[in-house]
Amino acid sequence: MAVKITAQVRETGKHSVLTGLRDSGRIPGTYYGRKIEPVTLSLDAGELKEALTTGSGSNVMVDLILEAAADSTAVLPKGSQVAMIKDMQKNPITGEILHIDLVKVSMSEEIHATIPLIVIGEAPGVKVGGVMQHSIREISVKCLPAALPEQFEIDVAALEIGDSIHVRDMVTPEGVEILDDADEILVSIVPPAKVEEEVPVEEAEAEAEPEVIGEKKEEEAGE
Image (cartoon, rainbow, N blue to C red; front, top):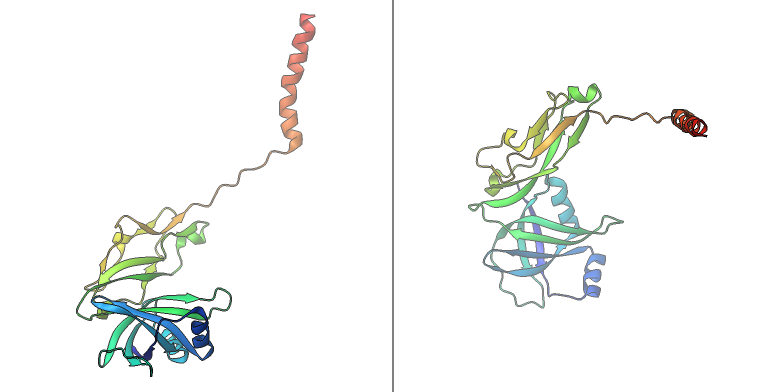
C-alpha cells in the first residue's frame, strides 16, 4: 500500500530559500509526468522518511496530496495523486536528503523501472576456491505499477566453477517484462586467479651465468 504524503506547492526559489526549507524540516522537490507541467514542492521530512522506511526496494510508491501555499494561485487537482519516487539528491557526507523527484503514475499504464538483484544461497564453486562475480546489480523492467517487483532474488546454491546465470534464466511474475539483453551474465563462478611464483634473484643470476661463461671460453679459444 502506498504511503500518503502531503506536499505543499511552492514557488521556484533561490539557494537560500531552499536552505531555509530544509532548516524548517521540509524537503524541496519536483513533481512531473505526462500531460502535466512540472510542479515545485516542499515535503515534510518526517513523512518522507516514513515513506522511504515503509517502502521496499528502489521504487517507492506514494499517494501524493497537493496543497497550495498561502501565497500561491496554482490550480491543483483534487484528491491524491499516485506518484513514484524517481530520484533523490543526498548530502554525500551526512546522507541528508537535499531534493527529491516524484513522477506521476497511472495505474493503467506500464512504467519502466530498475529492480535490484539480490544474491541468495551459497555456491558450491565458491566453497572449493572459486570466485563469484556479480556482474549486474539491477535489471530493467516494464510492467503496470501494481505488478512492480520490489526485488529479484538470484539463487546461486547450484553453481559450480564455470557456471553462470544469465538474464534469460530469470523467472519473473506475470505481466513483468525484462528489457535487458537475454545473454547478459548476472552471476558467474570463475576459477581462482593463478599466482605466479617469483624466481629468486640468485636463481635468475645462476641461470644466466653459463651463457656468460660460454661466451668467455669462445673468446679465449679464438685468441
